[in-house]
Image 1 (cartoon, rainbow, N blue to C red):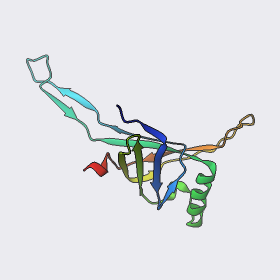
Image 2: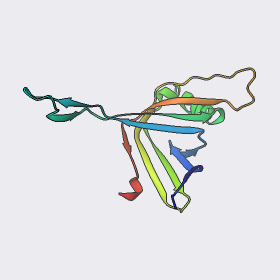
Image 3: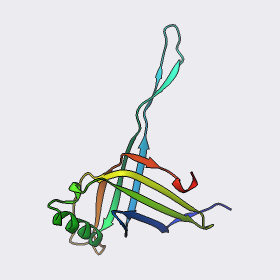
Image 4: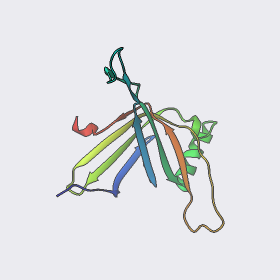
Length: 140
């Protein structure tokens, strides 16, 4: 039987507390290219670039406002918050826990938007700069 990880069993902790999060996304990218030598039409080697990490976290407005107020008290906005780690905990249907850690994160931007005909809560997407992604740190 496959282990299933559900959103209701996911916890996101950052800046010293657990946040109510609408969604979180993080990506690791590494470009790869082929190197060729004279006289051959097949690759001699594969060259890997540096890894790049990016992500986005979506917060309900009340969580964003709490974050914004703490940043404003320090004289800035959420893009001025010093680097921090984000810990994401997933608990599978079999009780197994997977913990991923996004290292040295910072918010890159934010925007707020509300539409007149919307009956949904405001969601604020925050693209994040990530210096490193560590997957399954509880299994290392």
